[in-house]
Structures are given as C-alpha cells and as structure tokens.
Amino acid sequence: MTSDAPVASGVESLYPFLYAGTSDLAPVLAAVRRSTVEKATEIVALRETMAQRYAGQLAGCAHALAVAFAGGGRLFTFGNGGSSTDAQAVAQLFLDPEPGTRALPAVALTGDVAVLTALANDVGFEVVFARQLAAFGRRGDIAVGLSTSGGSANVLRGFEEASRRGMVTVGFAGYDGGRMAAAGTIEHLFVVPSSSVHRIQEVQTTTYHVLWELTQHALADL
Amino acid sequence: MALDLQSAAAVAAFARRVPAAAAVADDAARVATACHDMAVRFHRGGKLLVFGTGAAATDAQHLAVEFVHPVIVGKRALPAVSLTNDVATLTGVAARDGVGEAFARQLQLLGDPADIALGVSADADSPSVLRGLQVAHERGLLTVALAGGHAGAIAHSPAVDHAFVARSEDALVVKEVHVTTYHVLWELVHVFFEHPNLLDETVPA
Image (cartoon, rainbow over all chains, first blue to last red; front, top):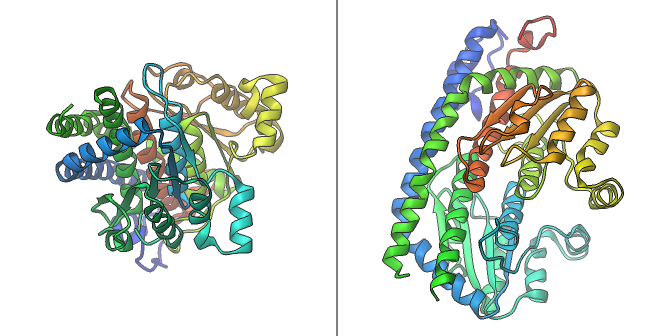
C-alpha cells in the first residue's frame, strides 16, 4: 500500500509507523519486532501496578474464598467471548490443579451450549448466567464474573442474582471498572487500569492465578 | 496465614512473573516472521485450526474468537476454529483411538494445505498436541506451537515451523505468556494486510 493510507483507527492509531506506506518486507518486519518489544514492556508495568494496588484485597478475597470452600461452597464462573475462556480457565484451575494442590468444586457457566442457547432463545442473552446461578447457586457459594469493559449486561445480571442469593462475589474488570464498579453487587472487584482489551485480559489472567495461589495458602491455614 | 503475610505473598507472586513476561521481547523477531507467514496463509484463503488440552483448551478457544471476532473495530474477521469444542467428536475419538489422536484425527479431515495449525502446550510435551502438529505438517499446513517449561518435544519437533517457548517451569506463568503471545500474533498479522504486496507468494519470507 503506497498511496491509499488507511484511516487512522485501532491498531493504526497506536502504531502509525506501521502504516506509513512501506512496501518492502524488511522495514515492516522491523516495525513488528519493535511493537512486540513495546507490548512486553507494557505488560510488565501493568502487572506491577496491579500488585501494588490489589495485594491486600487479593489476600482478603482469598480468605473469603477459603472460608466458603471450607463450608462446602462451590465456585461458579462466567464471562463472554475471550472472558468466557477465562471463566473456563478459572474453573479448570480450581477443579483440576496440578498434583500436590487441593482440588476444589468449580463449574464454568459457559460450558453447556444447550443451556446457554435455550436461555438465550427463550428469554434473552442477558439472563444466561443469572438463570443458571438461580438454579445452582446457594448461600456460601462463590460467583466469579469477568468482563473487560465492566459493562456486560449478562455478567451484571449474574452478579445481581449471586448477591441476592448470598454468594461470595468476585469480579474482574478493566478500564475504570465500568458498571461493575458502580453496581454494588460485587464484594471483591479487581480492575485492571488499562484501555487495551488485550492487556486487560493478560493481567486478569495473572490476577486470577495469584488469587488461586493465595486461596490454596489460605485453605491450608484455616 | 495472616493477611499481611498473604499480601506479601501476592506481591511476590506478581514479581515472579516478570522475567518470563519480559522475555517475550526476545521473541520479537520470531513473532514478526510467524505473523508474516500466517498472513500469507490467510491471504491464500487458509484458515487457522487451534488446539490444546486442559487449560490450553481455553487458550485455543480464546485464540479462535480473537481472529473470528476482533476486539478492534474495523479489523477483518479471519477464519479460525478451535478443535476443542466438539465434545461428541473429542470423546468419540478418545474412547476409540485414545486421547492422543483427538486433534490429529480432526486435522486429517478438516485441515487443508493452505491452513495454519496452532498447538498450545504449557509443558511442551502434550502427546495429542504434538501428534496434531505432526499430522498438520505432513499435510502441508503451516505449524505454530506455543510451548513452555523445559522446551520439550514440541519445541524441538521438525514438524513445527514456528515455536514460541515461554521461559518458565510454572504452567500458570507459561499460560500468561501465551496469552500475551497470541494477542500479539493476532494484532501483528493484521499489519501485513496493510501491505498486500508483501503477501504475494513469490516474496521470500
């Protein structure tokens, strides 16, 4: 592309040097290399910010989860898109961790396509998690919801239901926390202060991994 | 354990990630070459087939949705399928031929020579992921692996065109590095679409 410069948006606005009309491979490869290095630097800094901001709240949340599990509670996870894969990763980590750690009951609410499509078709997509929590959730269970924007309607509805049922509520969001920060239904909320969906997801992954590790410690010390 | 000790443990846990996360920068040249090769395949009409077991199955699904439904408005949707979704096929193959064939069998039937096969394995030893990459390579697909730990069989396999090995023995840290790596792969594949002259098959990679 030499004459029709694309309208600056998305990636282009972040990396204008990549869209300068280069026609040879070498400079594009060099620019792509630089972009990777910049992202590696960015993600290290963002995790450092999270550690400073949330270490104490992660400790408190891990204690609450340990108490819930010790009392027979189960973990339910939910999210949309990439966050649905995180919901499944959280459930898998608690349920099937590496040998030598304690396996705990956990279910991802995104796994059953029959239930998801039945609820979405018959009622609406905003209830797909809330209705499952109404069916499965009990006081003392745990609800973990993830959204990069903090504004997913079905995640917010899920937290409303979980809170109403007396579950321990744990949220992961990005940007400024969005509606999840204002909802009043999430006891433990971890907000990744970034506007990049990708960096938010990467730091959320680390944050739930650390939360799992601390929960294992907390269970051992109860 | 008192809460202040747990807070310190949290800080230490985040700090433990830094070397592996920073080391992604060392792979920058490999990332650039892989993105170019992947863009060429998409340009030729190929699709992306992704697979992994356990936690890596969630990464396979994350990768697929990343390409099919981009988070950045205006980026084109690219064909990508996770081979972890069809529970009937997965359990059928596993029961009949063993779990090691779970992805290879699907790649034999769904993989076209223009496609890209991307396998994810936190320990680089997953037999089913390795088998999948070998079958894909035999069929002429471009093969990409996200591995970790001690850089096991997958990282050294001659069937793998591009291997990215996270520098950690901790499977959780490896997964985190993989998430960053595939986000970067997705984003930078699109850079090459802005330079269609670089996607001509006659251009040497």
